[in-house]
Amino acid sequence: MAPKKVEAKKPEPKKPDPKKEAAPVVKPVPVIEEPAAPKEPDFDPKSITLEFSADQIEEFKEAFQLFDRTPTGEMKITFGQCGDVMRALGQNPTNSDVLKVLGKPRPEDMGSKLVDFETFLPMLQHISRAKDQGNFEDFVEGLRVFDKEGNGTIMGAELRHVLATLGERMTEDEVDQLMMGQEDVNGCINYASFVKHILSG
Image (tube, rainbow, N blue to C red; front, side, top):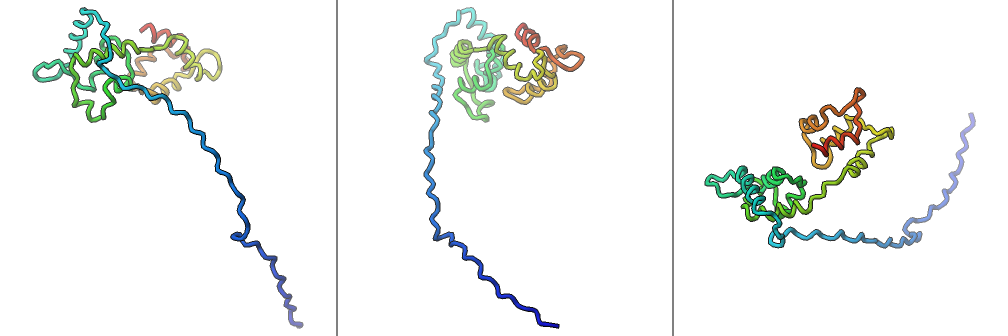
């Protein structure tokens, strides 16, 4: 048997040394800064002019007293009760509205810090002026996003999910109460009549 021929290895072509090769020059992309949103001024209760009548103030005082839990009836409520009192007086502030007029307190202050009636009145006045409850068309337009068929109805299950998980979340009981008798046999809701139902209540 003949010995195998050993072929000489061909020299591999030299790879260029990556260090020696000039790296492409990358120009930095100029950073375009978004203009900062105008900072909302802090709420100043002293700047609020009260427009309530003497009768209204007396009525507010009675409602305020119902929430007063101080041992000696000092006419004070906790920060956490402010939104409840405002809602009891016919306003509908969001939780963030209430926190704003309270000066954005820490969560632990909500149950311990107190507000007296004289401090509460300007807050109530501010909320009553600023209330933008939206109108029928605004709500219908908002719900139209969920109308996949374009037939004026949305799935009840989807609406339940949105109400319970987005924005100021509602409890399951609140959602059930709100949607009682609104779903058809297919589990769909006519959202225009749903909005009418809510606004009339």
